[in-house]
Length: 308
Length: 308
View 1 (cartoon, each protein chain N blue to C red):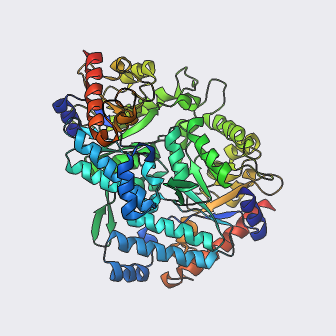
View 2 (cartoon, chains in turn orange, red):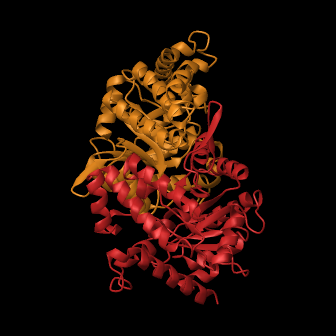
């Protein structure tokens, strides 16, 4: 799957992943009204609204991009119906030929991480049969529990030819509270996590990049530069572009000299583009998906210029 | 809810939480066959088997214990039907008067942590209505993203009078890879996380303990002793007793002088007691729930002796 991701990035010329992180305040009123008319103001109604909203965006941008990243929390908040919408979104995006990165940030002790890996990347056995649960192509993994928590994901990745992105340096303002703490050797914790990503990744190589990638926030470009060197074979999933403050020029250091090695996420900046200063006068809520397409094209251009 | 947890622990005399972490290999064949006869060898069939298995255990032990801790990964691996079984288990345990600790180990950047907190502890707004998603009483939270990732849970806890347990030192063998790393000041990372738990907890106090608790593994009793002092007002959720190797005598340092301050989890040791050396000759699969009851009573005695 890492080989497919790389080849799709090359084909589209867009190292971009669209974060499908729907909030009700992003969903145009027309879509909400229609869903509520059918299902009432219920969790099912909210889930239907989110699903229809996602579908509109995916239909508008799928030919431009290699991948999407649904953030499961945004679905999980609506309980079971929300998770049904997550599963539908994953399946639909795969139908459209997109690589799906489940942003689930799971991580636990061995047998429990195995269960998460099984549910999101692999197949679970039921009697004499086996079934995929959510069936994403990649998931994000939290490393706080160490190798025990990460290796079970790697085992499933090996079997299924899928991949993970391990949180190394996250994009949020307080990420430094623990991640930036300096260890005895004078290096920050995130560098040590980066080194482990490199070690784990060496056990699970694709053609040119590893099945084990890393998450490093666009909001910390200098750290990105150091981590790029520490983990030369890891694809870096870069959140924090756009709404969180990361800019095209900040992204340069996340890429390798081959022009590959990083994929930049934008969520709100794409999916709620129609509400932004840049697009709200050109595209109203009726044309929210067209605004998303315009925002993807602008982001592609911004990154291309930065890398040129 | 922390006050309720403390009072239930005092009432039952059992600082014990039963981990409802079902695996298919624990579920007696009779229950599996019945579920598969009704739903086929499907995800729905597996979910039904797990739910019936859980129900049997809860019915057999609910009067002895204050709380249960379903591990969501074990349900999530069966996709949507598995999560339906999780939600049913949570609701049923609450009906039985048990405090429910959702072992979800979530944690993300601000708005995303908010969504998890909403889905698991709070209410989500849909139009003019609001709904609880999974509605646990407590959840476990991963601190790797810092305060941004934890505070949104605290906000919901404040509103709902619910609580969290933050991962400080986990019970697994590789937990030391990052958690034990010594920082510049000569202290390990887990102590710094413990100090943050104390700080966060001071903002959200119940009568005698904080709504912000901590997870510290029974497998690391010396670290438990240090962390007990660092976080005097935090309830410590102690996994790793039993199957993972933690023993009654290891638990002493996790408690405060008031005999409170810790609640010890056992999962496999209780729910699969009928398969263990200690109980398999007395209780067969038909009486798996009675074996769980006997195991709870033995654990209660073991802890009481250690604390005496």
